[in-house]
Length: 107
Length: 235
Image 1 (tube, helix red, strand yellow):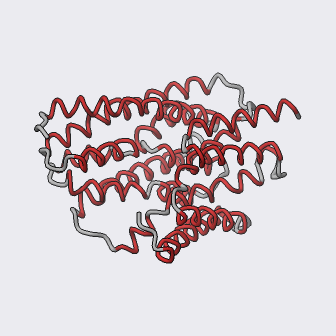
Image 2 (cartoon, rainbow over the protein chains, first blue to last red):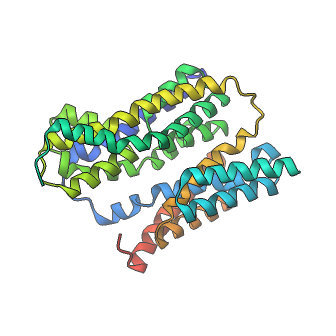
Image 3 (cartoon, rainbow over the protein chains, first blue to last red):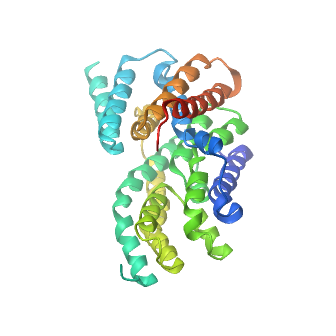
């Protein structure tokens, strides 16, 4: 999709949208209170979207034509366990990469 | 507590923000590498980091572009990942809302996870400091973090063009996302939201135009909100 108008549409729309989200309250709303039900939903946007994005990639990786791959699955689980327990993003990424590379070499 | 001059607040911000250099550094670099691998040229990759300036959202857009998802789905999903920025904006408004509009515009542009987290801590620790000091502290935190985001993206993009495409990088993105998700699972409601979203994403994988992602995202949000109400979680 490189060099296509779509790519620039995406970049510009995301730029305007992200700025809009950041400016929404600071610039426009002031310190009026938001309805609690809305805040309650907003709290879970990232933790709902990211797992939804990642789950199919883990279970059906494109690199293996959608065939579930024990190596990638193990690496993903190891990453999640370390990320959850240590809350250290980089320790988790390092673990995932090490498991992925290690198991690929063994295979 | 003694009143701080804006200048000393600025430098305190720089000092507090400095360690985050090592957090955004690898992420920006990874974005540069993966964007280049995905076929974006240098201008496009840099435009992404400068115009959007939001790691997780940039990675989301990149992944969905790789999957050839429809433009609207890409935009909606990446913005959903950035929805938390609206909450940052709301939370910081009582402290910085009285700034002139152009300064609020600057704060809004640089309002990212790191600048928000450090600034809100500082303002809550000492709410009575002058608004000039508060703004200076924010700009201090921003200084080592945000410009570095552009620099490391550039480094990654230059590096990426020298890495052969088939180096197992296809799984770098999922690993990075999973590593980001782990620390988010801090309450039972967050865990419920993530679990429901995973189940829905796998169950709705057949839905065309990547709309399964949107369904799973909305379902996960509602599940999290419901869990919060029913379990009476205090945040």
